[in-house]
Amino acid sequence: MQVAIKRLIANEVDGQMGGVKSIPSPAISADERSHEVDHPSSQVAHFGTEQPLRLDCGVDLSPFQIAYQTYGELNAGRSNAVLICHALTGDQHVANVHPVTGKPGWWETLVGPGRPIDPKHYFIICSNVIGGCMGSTGPASINPATGKVWGLDFPVITIPDMVRAQAMLIDRLGIDTLFAVVGGSMGGMQVLQWTAAYPSRVFSALAIACATRHSAQNIAFHELGRQAVMADPDWHGGGYADHGIHPHRGLAVARMAAHITYLSDAALHRKFGRRMQDRELPTFSFDADFQVESYLRYQGSSFVERFDANSYLYLTRAMDYFDIAADHGGVLAKAFAGIATRFCVVSFTSDWLFPTSESRALVHALNASSARVSFAEIETDRGHDAFLLDVPEFFDISRAFLQSAGKARGLSGKKDG
Amino acid sequence: MSVQEVLPLGGLAAGQSGQFRADHLLVAEMVKPGSKVLDVGCGEGDLLQLLETRGIDGRGIELSREGVNRCVAKGLAVVQGDADTDLVNYPDDAFDYVILSQTLQATRQPRVVLENLLRIGRRAIVSFPNFGFWKMRLQLLIGGHMPRTENLPATWYDTANIHFCTIKDFVQLCDEINVKMERSVALDLYGRPVPLNLPWWVWNMFGEQAVFLLSRGGGK
Image (cartoon, rainbow over all chains, first blue to last red; front, side):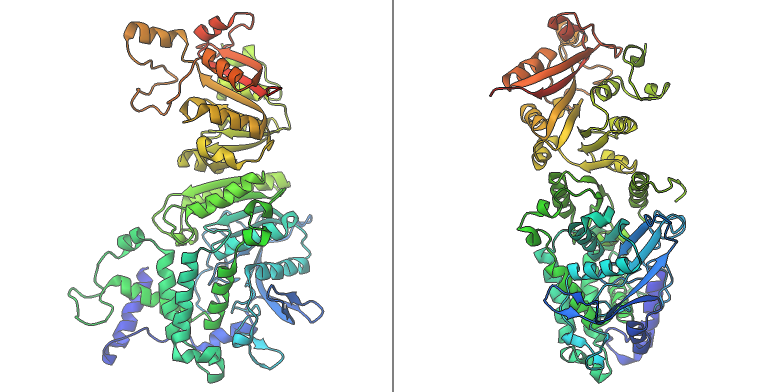
């Protein structure tokens, strides 16, 4: 947070001469980001024309690639693989320094040496989702048919499409059954989709701060973000790549709006209150007088350095379409009928994007299916983002759940994980 | 005298029984190893842990968030829920046994809860404090105040226990809703079973708590 504010101050100072400032331009060049799109700094699995990805929209995507990272070793019985599913703007760099931003992995609180998901015990896989922009095929990738960036010609993808692609990657890695599939938010949706689509391939599932469907309010927030992107003249109907620019202002506004939904009123009040940013009196302008404004502008401007605007449209759309019950005749319990997977569902009290009531509905459906399920609601004022932050109770629960599942799976029951 | 002396529990290592509650040991002894069990109102998961040592697939529901989180942090399959409202989500015959340990008196609708237990479980095990216990009677008769005991220390105005009953009352309810009592044990103040050959009124007088193994009655 301190770093964020300081950086903001630097940006503010740079912009002093320009009068009223809007969101600063990205500090990282578009080249750095676009290089990762087709040539990621991670492992890549290529799927040729003989292995198309059948999408829900009816299109066969082919050829395509999946960028992924692995940590730890697959054991002889191939029984210790853990798949981490990332959230809307995450990527495969879950526990290593990010190649574009230079920041630590996005889930190093949970994944890494000494953490609940420790590479010493598990073979950890994390892949960039289809539709993403960090190396898996998406709207920012080159369309092999035209030699140009896909843009809006890229087919609309869904959460089940992402999971189908991950299953192809898991096949490629020679893994039949995953010991655990773990994810929060959009990652949690993928976890649930895994259990609904491939119940026998998932030994245990840790679904955090998620839901079995996207609510009307969440769709509304996503639409707001998409409209912000599309209202930026630099978006050019999605064809900005041809113009050599990026709609960073629209995307930054989308991120700012979304970021508010990841926090809570209490957390914002605690962090910023009505405190002024680097000044004591209001400037009587539309400058970022308040710390909370500076913070949001920073969140917006740093996001556009690493994310593609069209990719944001596609991934938010995928979340909007997600509704497991609808795919099972409107009865959620049918999606999990007779499932042997061990579930752990976690929600956070101040999460208003994926409130506890959504997790409870999932738990009721799992109970109705006689599934083995643990469900904990964790008290915190940090909102939806709590799943990415240092919340010890969440780590204790994750660790205990995986250890208990590991015992049932016959993995070594070392307690030091 | 520990319960273990009167109630040998197979499969439990010697010296381990001391860490478990008397009624939990009794309940665990009633459950066939290898079966599937739901513990309603599982608290911090002590009974579930005891059942797991006996190779039983145990699940739990607990009302308090702290209790649930402690259970989950022990690796137990426990969810936050309310016996009064959440049992309806479970399908018929989902479990071999459904256990309601020292919780019946805290439910809003004990009769509906009991009916649900025997819908989702082929058998139910219910334990509850006996309000007909002589010490209780004495406190009301002589002291003229609502009884409070070591096991039930709360005052009338802050107790969660809103539906106290006696062993006699419970037996009557079971008859009314056609529930078969397969086994019944009353434990005295020291956790010792009241001898089986004594009549009901003795149990109702000297049982500090009771444990019933129930199944669905025929007919009706």
